[in-house]
Image (cartoon, rainbow, N blue to C red; front, side):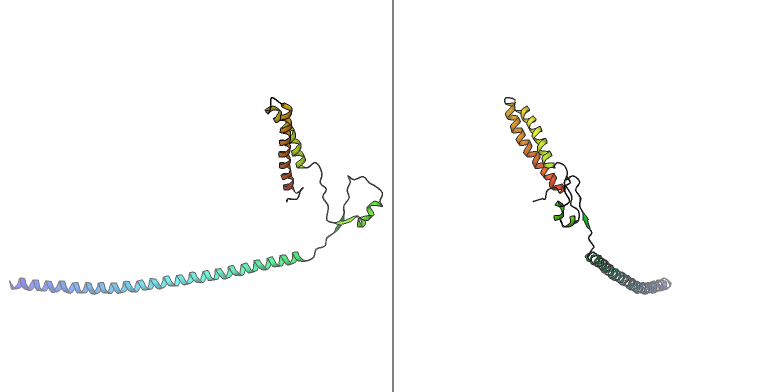
Length: 180
């Protein structure tokens, strides 16, 4: 019986001795894990600093580039602000009937700056009025079956006014008439 008790006590000591070694190994592993974690944290901080440094360099380069662009624009505007030579041209209208050369002498030797554009043809307002009157009269005569003449007159007036309004708007867009 003494042998069994002695074997039990030795086995309990052996198990507790092994357990203490596992705890110390576990404590060492925990300490090692803390150190590894701190090393990783330092590496992350180094990466953050490197990213911040790159961002700062990018911002500096961006600022330098924008300053260079502004300087180029200033140089262009300075070059554009220099006085330019304007050539005087002589405008000759061929549609006008020729008269004696003495009548054109009042125009400072016939020269002017730039060219004067002559407006040719019928305006869009006049075209719109003519088309509106004809189509309005035809439509008015068709609609008013009892008094076709009166319908044509009323339709022509309404069509002419509408055509003129639309044509005038087109003239403003094309530059023939100055907008209000």
